[in-house]
Length: 285
Length: 285
DNA sequence: GAGAAGCTATTCGGTTAGCGCATAGATACA
DNA sequence: TGTATCTATGCGCTAACCGAATAGCTTCTC
Image 1 (cartoon, rainbow over the protein chains, first blue to last red):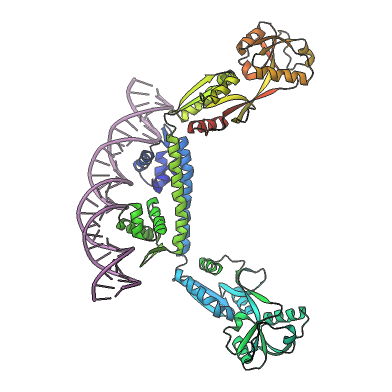
Image 2: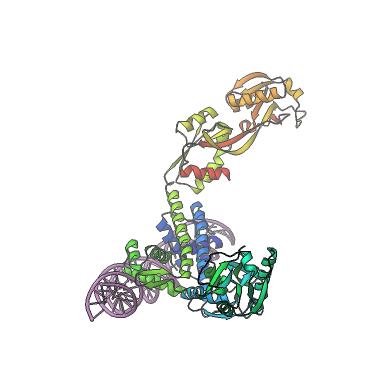
């Protein structure tokens, strides 16, 4: 049983005769006749009744055609998927991300993606979250990593949750595992100088009616960690932004845990390219 | 793209290597290699990554295999259906039916069935309804026509509804279209001598609190019609049993219509043979 | 009832595709 | 560096498929 034989059978059903099917299939009538003859011979069952005005399916022929049509559809599905795959060759994938995700999350994912799709040219640009949004909106990036939620202009998928931690210089004597609001109330903090970050912290503190003394607003998270190590204050940072945490700095969960959601986002109003779809598959897995 | 190429691809996926797949498929390793090579060449896409310890699907290969498996399943479905069809060759179909269905309903259906399945030997036996049940239970018939409902021992399908009619000799002067209980109350009736039939009539009459004078119980419905034609009384019969109604006899609906359901039945506890299934398809259509 | 017109089946010769066998090439491991 | 274990390939053969031409069948027409 060949796919081409099934194609012939289906075409005869549609055309009503061997000869018309031959024209449609752009092959000779004899080839059509023999395709059916060999199929019928293999199955040992008559599939068509030949008459004056062409050919008509037998009842078993109808059943066979029903399945044959599905087979032909599946063959087209295969070709469609393959063409999608080929359209991905020599294409590019421009990722925009905020720093901590770009540093700690993306490299392994990109490597995994490239192992499967070596012919996609991947580029990665770092911005703050607002910059990532702007890159997506401006068409300068195909896909972005962002803290969620975002506006409805973006379609997003959650990738991980990132807990905020308090960083303190490590005292030599004791390294307690937890810290209380009381102990925190006496600290003066270094915050990350991104609106989304500081707002989340300030709102959390005020929700639990805690005083928040802010001594510095710093843009580079590695700078913040160094400042903590040097004893210039405590810090409140998402864990991913704090990494790598040096030996001399101790991290604690916030007394009431606070976390941010990290996700991947694309513009909602433009259909994702094949490369984007495949990269999303890798990120979601 | 061949079904056999897809079969090879799927088998390699299951076996993990070209050479093992060759053993399973009982073909040479070179044939396996070239089947895949030509498939990849046709699709212009790598489906397998060849490594030290065999072969593994590429991402697009996985997608192709998913569809290929469905194609192979469909091919098996075709073979299954064809074998079912062949098992029907030189088989027989023994139908049991009561007289009126056998005369007026079955011939056209059997002819239609035989046009599609000339190689099935069809036989038809006439019984009264109790005899049809007995033939089915005794394994002497594969399928029966019966008034419904039946006991749960049978699986049944309704085929048609058959209205009871009152037959009277046609008066030359007037042929009214309807008849009243009052007019009927003065008649003496000839009934069909089958329990199921007379019971239905008697119950209907008593439900509507009408007197029923029975002059004769006759077994042959054609005899009843002749007796009416000869003026020996009125008759109450299912329309199908009364046919053909001669010119000299007038038929009326019962003042409150009464009908019987005619259906086809098989034994519920044995799976129907392919021939029975196909004949049921014809009857249901 | 002879012929035309519509169809499918078959014959013929040439080409292609698929097969097994044997062997070459690649790669990891001892 | 040799060995074991894969896949790829060259070679000769066979079977399958193709188009062109033609035969054969059925129905309709005159």
